[in-house]
Length: 620
Image (cartoon, rainbow, N blue to C red; front, side):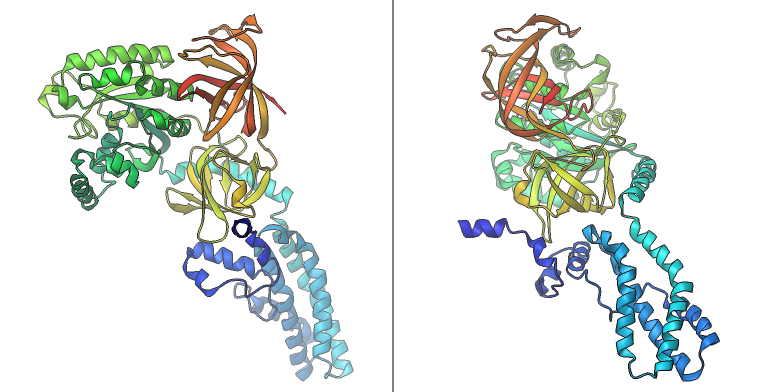
């Protein structure tokens, strides 16, 4: 076991520190993408060779300017020889400078040492090389070289050193500021005027979430007919013919076999005014932690309920997930909700049934904290595709329903304000090994923006690395901003040190990491009261961490936030309280007042959600 561990924890970057041209096998070229290969191969060959010519540089200008000077001082054969020696010297000087400018990482700081070192080396090298020349010629040529280096090279060298200097801190800072102004314009340009929206689909198990969204994606043309036909045939063979559309989003064998969504499926589609990142959350109570992960990354939600007799009641009454999902998304900051009353074709599009469901659910959602104006109810059928992307033509429905179809409702959602101006924050939702060097992490950027080549700090492990590549919706990009779900290729860190739930930030503005913090919590329906030392499971963004309630500080008034009781002995259903929590391992947190997205969390106990809270104080 120890042998495998050593291999797994081996830092491959160390192999390529020196001038090792043999550190890479031939096969490596073919199992990585060209862009990754270009960077990967270059990192092994970052020592410049003096012989290799550099195509980008225009030597002609240098040769002409030097020859005009030489014409005044030399003639005939001497002139030819000195031009030869001077041009080869200028090449030896220029090549390292070009290489130094393009090398990434720590070697850039060596840029200032290059001119002096290269000139000396150049002099000694060419002096040795031209020993067979007469003493007079060599003196003349060295004089000319000095003249040329004073007249031509200083300005060139200054320019080069400025370019080398560009990655250093002060210049980069101004570049960042300039880029920050551009980032908003770039966002508008990139989306073609379309706004970005993260949408999560939630609801009780078997309400038809995956079928509803799978059919909608098919109608929008995101799934081609051939693929859909294949799903239909395969689902018939498996004896689950009605699950064909659900297979668009339920991609794993186990999900298809069991007929339930287990993990958050993610895909992208576009409406007339928005680019939507769709997350299909699991409805089964065993997979609520996964559902919380999806809901924590969402801006708006679709709550799917089953209109069939008995099915809606089972999902809505005690023990059903409809209530819990509604409470969870509201506690995680979602304020806009579309309720898709699904399977309406099974009750013959009855208006009475629709009104019964909207009455019960509307009352509950209002209690949960949703405004009536932010909740819309839409009758749909996921299997037949009625009222999904176009308003239904069915006579039974058009008699009494004149509202929007589901796609129009999604299009009418108001996108939230993106925190582009805040420091960079990305919460890791998945970690995996890439084919090339380094590894990949995926997650949603909560605040700020990132560019390729940026240095990043991972908390809690407190390790730094470099973002070598950024992928957005499976396409490589140079930058990404708040609200984007991205995949980052990272180098300079061991994959073992990164877990799901780690937060990446800028090294200059790091996020705080702690094991103790104070929070204001709202207690849901609980059977046993919460006391000091109560064990809970803390769900925060993509983290699930065991914790203990160390202190009950005070009970607060729900509406005003004033202290009504100090040092309570216990907390019961519906109370609002200030408590101190302690986690087993450090977690990276932000105060709710600074970062709303990174200041919210949920508490669960024995399979049910018992409280939602916001971070008020971080204890170091």
